[in-house]
Every structure is written in structure tokens, then in C-alpha cells.
Amino acid sequence: MLFRSYSHVRSQLRALLESGHADQVIRLGEELWTKGNEQVGQSNDEGETADEITACMEIVLQAVPSSSMSSVEQLLWVIDRALNDEYSLLDSAANILENTTYTQDTWYTVANELENRLKAMKQPATATFSSTYSRNRVMNMLVDAYTRSGKPERVIPLLEKEADVGQCYETLVDALLAAGEIEKAKQWCIRGFERTIKSAPGIASALQGRLRQLAEKEKRYDLVSAYRAEDFFDRASRQTYSELRKAAEKAKVWPEVRASVLSYLETGRRPDQAEPPKNSAWPLPRPEVVRPHDKAAAKFSKFPDLDMLIDIAIMEKRFDDVVGLYRELRKIKRWSWETDKAVADAVAASHPLLAVDIWKAIVDSLIAQVKPRAYEEAAGYLRRINKVYQQNQQISEWQSLISELQRVHKAKRRLMEVLAALSGKKILD
Picture 1 (tube, one colour):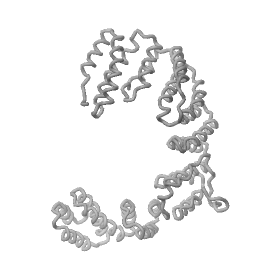
Picture 2: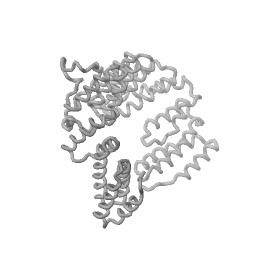
Picture 3: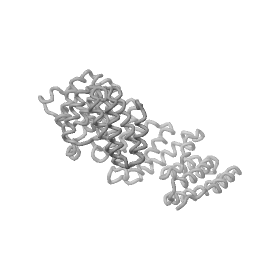
Picture 4: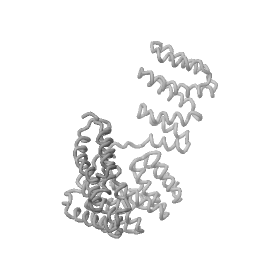
């Protein structure tokens, strides 16, 4: 279905509202809401239809406070549609709910209605997102109603009752933390983690993150480090290594942790999972929650993890080690372009010949694509080669390289233009 303009509808709604016919605007808005949702669901545009209907519904929402409905009915009219707003057509609904003309008593009545609705809802058979979606929306609206009605003390009991039903552990933990109930928040983090680690790992990860943040606030840097180590062993990367280092340095155990991490990358044996006395060198405590060993992912892990060892050596500016590890990598993996590029950039000053060899291989692979864009990219690496040759007084090698490329690829006209531009420069920045 193609995009349809609603400008005429918008004009009529605005004219009715300005003439004092708020109830008529509401009636038309109800019809627009039903048919508009159907049209958005069937539309084949880039959101233009939804934008048009949203603009119309904004006028309808403006009519709500002026309608003949009671204050409670007005709020429930908006809430009912907000709870079923699958296409974000009611972006202005928050403005109505935040209107200070609605008193705490009004919100208290609304809260009671939402309580009854929640009680009447059938509990989902499973705690999956799709099964709990509608229930959690009503619950979140009830939490908001409690707050606006001056009954914030009802929020935590509600969330505790609903936590296992709808997996709203994060909302509950945040409410407990806001109330200063730290230990209770920790216990719910642990409980929620254990109940979601298999079915909803994203929620479990967020709860684990909150435990780490709490440990950081309490300056328990050894526990923070243990959580960062979990992250590294689960997803080894420059970022997780850097975060682990920062935490372990605060805990004053970085040398021991670093040695164990490098050993893990060599052997694949996690120091935090070894049994005493084998792990006596591991200085960190066991976290409150631990992700289970992923056997499926472990099948694809290869040790020694030379790519990660190289990344770490580059970060620590151990360039001789970078070269040694890279040579080991080349024995088992022909090319790993991201690692190759990182190595060449890192050792260009300390080991220029290796950097040049890597860049030459990259240039050859780009030229082999026979695409103008690839030729331009190859020129960038040729500039790096030129810079190294210039710094090492090897002008003849540079000239020979360009000449050889021109000879071998003389049939590639666009490449010849790129090489001609390069050959006319002394030092290529």
C-alpha cells in the first residue's frame, strides 16, 4: 500500500478542536486509531503513513482534557491506547499523563482499575518476552500510576510479585536501589540471573552488570575484577582486556591476573575455573553469579589464541613479541587481514620490512578485485610503503615497486592512473 496523505484529516480535526468540539474530535480519533493502525500494518512505505497518523493523533490527544469525559475516563482513554500502541502513533501521550490537572486521587482510581486488570490477566505459561509483553506493559503503567497517586510504597511489592512471572528483575532491582535496599537488590540480581541465564541471557547479563556496578560503588575492586575477567574469558577483545586491567590495577593484582590471562590465551585453560591448588596464582574471588560454560562456543575456540595475544602485545608496545607471535600465526593462517593491518601499523617503525611485506600483500589482494574503489584503497597502503622507504633511504625500492606494478597490470587503465599519480610524488603523506 502506497503512502497516503492525511493533511485534510489533520485540518478538519484542528478546526473542530478550535471550534470547541472536543468530543467529536475524540470520536473521530477513535475511528482513526482503529483504521490507522490497520493501514500502518499494511503500508509499504518508509514510515510516512505512520508519521501522518501520528500528527493527527496528536490533535486528538490535545482534545482529551477538554472532552466531557471524567478525569479518570480521560486518563484511561489515553492509557488504553498507549498500551496497544504497536507503531508509536501516540508519541504525545506522555504529555497528557503528565498534565498536573489530574490529581493524586484521580490517579489512585486509575491505579485501582489497572490493579483489577492485572489480576484478571491470565498468567503466561512461560516467561518469554512474547508471552509476558502485554502483562508487563500493564504492570509498568500501574507502577507509574502508583507513583503519580502518591503511593510509591506499593511499587516494590508489586514488582516482587511480578518478577518471576514477567522477568521484570531489572525494574525491581532499580526500584530497590532507589529505595536504598542494597542487599535485597543484590539477592534479586542473583535470583533473576539464575532464572534467566538460559532463557533470557540479555536480562541475566544486565543483572550481572548491576552486581559489578554495586561492587564498584563499594570499592570491592577484587570482585569488580572478577566480573571483568568473566567478560574477558567469555568475549576476549581489546575492550574487555582493557577493562579487566583497569579493575585489576585498582585491586593491586594486575601482574598476577595478567600472567594468568596470557596463560589462558596460550592454553585455553581458564584460571578462574581451576581447582586448588592449581589456581593458587589466581588472586580474584568467585563472583556472586557466573555464566555457565558454553560448550558449543568452546568448539570453535582455538588455542593458542594468537590474534588476541598479538592484540595485547600491540597494546603493551611489545613489538618484538608482536613480530614473533605474528610469524607463528602465519604458519597456521595464511591471511587474517585485520590482524595483518594492525601488526603492520604497529611495527612500521621497529620492523619496517615486515610492515612493507604485509602492505604489499594487501595491495595485491585489492588490485585483484579489479575495482576502481579497491585501487584507491590500495593507493593508501602504497603511500604507507612509500613513507617507510623514504624514512629508510630506499628510494630505488619504491621506484621498482611502482614500475613492477605498472608492468604487471598495464591493462588496468584506472589502476594505471592511480599509479601514475603516486609515482610523481617524492614523499606520499
